[in-house]
Amino acid sequence: MKYTIETIGLVKRYPTTLRKAVGGGFPYRSPRHVEVGSFGGILGAIHGSRGPFIEALKGVSIRIKEGEIFGILGPNGAGKTTLIKILCTLVLYDEGEVYVNGFDPKREPGEVLKNLQAVLPESRGFNWRLSGRQNLEFYSLLYGLSDIEARERIDYLLDFTGLSDRADDGYQRYSTGMQRRLLLCRALLRNTPIIVFDEPTAGLDPTSAAEFRKMIIERLARKEGKTIFLSTHNLQEAQELCDRIAILDRGRVIASDTPDNVRHLIIEDRFLRVAFADASYGAEQERLLSDLEAFEGVHGVSAEVDQGKRLHGVTLSISKDMDLTSILELIARSGLRVKALNTEEPTLEDAFNAITGHDDKQAPSREGGV
Image (cartoon, rainbow, N blue to C red; front, side, top):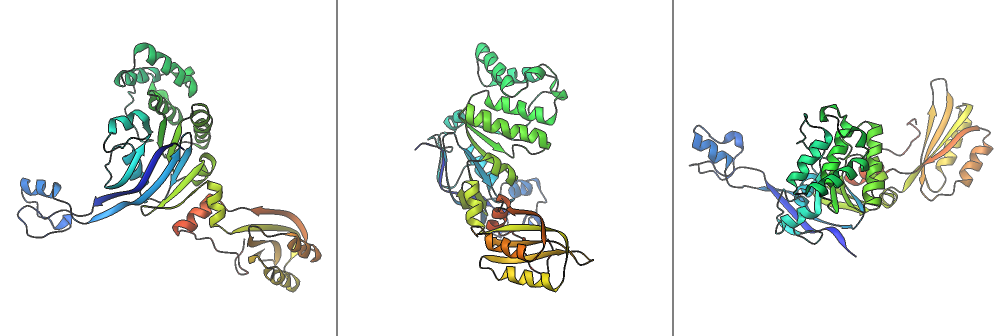
């Protein structure tokens, strides 16, 4: 099987302190303790040698198949940006192996850049006085495209991204979503097989974000056959977009699989929510809750009761494969009128929080309301 991106035991370290200052005898000192009373002292502080290190990536191994949409998730400081910069030849790794379509970013950066293009939301470089088309023509010159090739490619990309009708409008008249699509046009001018996105929908309104995600799935991945590597904080977006994901935490890959497998393998429970019509809360209902808790596979029961002792519903935390027949029969025998019934599967956000240790969700209890 061909992997378009592969990392094996990837390690990246960053220095955390300065070397001893010019003329000083101390090995490692905080920048605020370094004396920089002279210009030479300032240069010495800036160019001081490396001290202790922090590992941004600790043995990261991932494999991304050709034509796959692969997402990298993780909290701030997990190492996502460092990984993207290594793939884009902006940062050199310290240990391990990295291959982009078989080329090493450290030894063959030119070949890597022929195969990979990054689309970063904070990217700049468009001239506000030029139209969208003129901006793309400028970049096609920089990329070395011939006039005929550039004209055909630009026309295709403007149509591809839905910008044809606004192609000759000034860039300053473009909305944020249109600017993001023009940025994608620029990234696709060289027609590289791999596209890297960092927070692809950051700053977009919900409608524009949905359109951009649809473009990634239906046009880039399915129609063009591009391999997509993206970093995102939007877990719903990752669940919707990605064929597979890897969760990065403190520089390590701690889970990697399809979004569905990750959320179902990590979270063992689901929630059953039952809403009642015109129900009061008393001793009989208290016994019902106790009976529900006694079922094997029920891990918690919570009642939603208002100040007037009206029972609006119950929520049960249950095993994901539990048969609900006995529970529903017990509720039916209690005489309560069921107004609504639904189950909630664990989300990718639930799994992410559980994996990274940020899970604040508690199993339902008697004392806690829904």
